[in-house]
Length: 231
Image 1 (cartoon, rainbow, N blue to C red):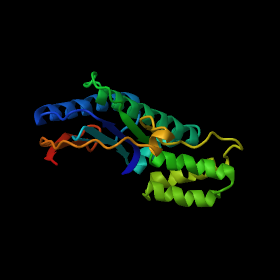
Image 2 (image 1 turned 90 degrees about the horizontal axis):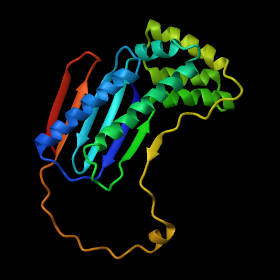
Image 3 (image 1 turned 60 degrees about the horizontal axis):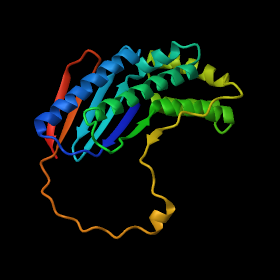
Image 4 (image 1 turned 120 degrees about the vertical axis):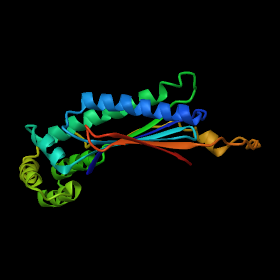
């Protein structure tokens, strides 16, 4: 399976009782899954969401088979356009997850931190950019593409032929490669970093039990699985 999108989410909020935390996590997965189903036009995929306390930390990933990914990208007139289109959808899915994850905490002053990564899509896009820039030959790009896709099936072989043709016909000007998007809290000013305030004495607190909820579905129509662990 190939990872085509990962989203990391962090929100500094108080811990929840385990029953509420499990309910929050499963509802988040269900809402995210519904959105994925409406946005991604892939015939099948693997979805996984891990939500952890200590504030709320969530990590999602979307996996597809090489055959599914190759079939989707080959359906476009240009493989490069297919990569860009799919990445745009993956970005929308990651943004939605961040919005829904923070929705149950409207009163918090903390801003969520979200980081989205295109994973294999970013790597494929980078191949086009480097071939266009002259820093990578078509043959070198094909070798790297084989490592990204990782399967040797008839469908993948046919896709690789189309990919080579697409790389050979790369236009002289292309958009910059897909970048990883990351929303971070505002950084401290240089003065603050040079002259940090005196550390405050810490008051020891008794931390409540904390949990991790893992939710996944191994295929689009597969059974949803849930696992709750104390951490």
